[in-house]
Image (cartoon, rainbow, N blue to C red; front, side, top):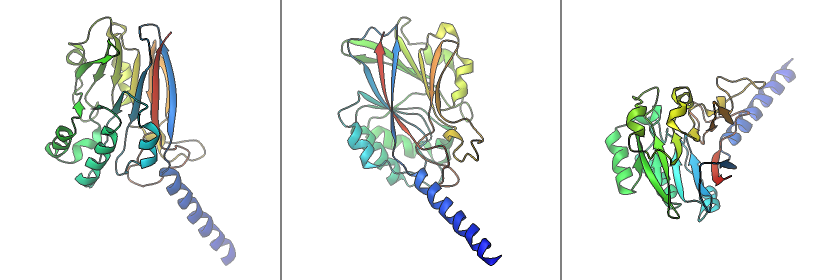
Length: 253
């Protein structure tokens, strides 16, 4: 009986070690999307990362993406309560080395003083998209990058977010919470939505978790990428929902 008890203890410890190691993997997933309304001679190349929380972005990811992307998008939850400002700035510095950085707010980003985060953003020229947009120049062509406030802790205003967007531009929308998809209408003309927040369930037992795993899907003509995210919350553990970042190429059909 004692032997069986120690076997279970050993198996439990091994599982915890496995879950800890899985939570600290450094995966870059590649995605290629093609749309008919992207009159581009060359693809738009993006690096998308969400839900960093307490993690330090590993240098292997930066090395892999250096000189590979046109810009970086942070899909919210850059941090959570207790994360040192030095670590936040270190992560921003690394991402800024890849290209211009754009950010949308997540629910956990409100857990420290915004003025402290905004000071870091100002230092590293991070553009915050809060119910706003920018027209990005890509080889003499323009496309629209739109960001909205968090559905849970902020105030989403789609009218405000789209007010400066050119009607015929290719439109990419970033929202920390993937449920934004249900608020979009055909008239908005969005082709691609990038989201995080769910962590893919983070810990999935026999395939089941509190949220769906990250995925790419199409809903009423809009393509959405939902990321498992890079970090963790509550426990630095994952099971069957590996962390991920994303290298995205957007092409013309």
